[in-house]
Image: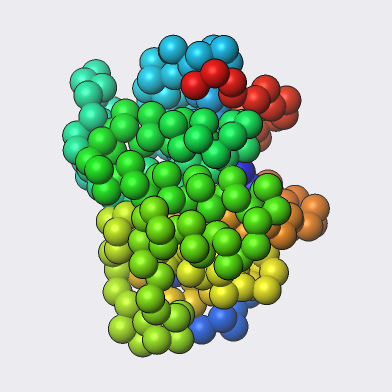
Length: 266
């Protein structure tokens, strides 16, 4: 979870003021958490509170926690349709393929005890709002990379799996950096986030890669960071720096989820 949060915070000041270089200070006084952090925590909270034997109440828990936590932060950067969903009594999905489904999915890969289970959870966590096939695909692609990374798979294995199931990664960051533009769709930002991880040599380097290409910097870095966390781990000092940007309520939500019970029988 902290990989997504750190990426979000580090990328926050660059979302609408892109920085196409890896040279920048990672944390500054101008950084802040956005909807990426808020929804990552909300989805994780729903997963931890859902019935672990079959997750029959997962959709109910997702709607509850995404709205309960989300409404506390009405100005944290939601897209227009999602903001309407958060504030509305109508909880039906709205066929989105925005990258919000990919940035909030990291806990699916940590709470599941198989790749198959993690992908099923990712689909359900996406589909409460982002039930378009591309929205689900983006969530599953990020989740698969995280799961494979935490299970010790090599970057080449992760690349091969991604390309066989989800996206062709037929570009390098150097090739797209001069021309890549803001894109909030899964298909226009999830592949770039995965490539940013694949070209990295450390957790911090992955975050710098993600931000350096421009575009939707906080969300791309959140997705990249969630994968990089599983592969490299994160230094405690960096986690503590990220925690300093969160308020007491969000910290209390995280603390309530320290014990992970694996998902079974999905």
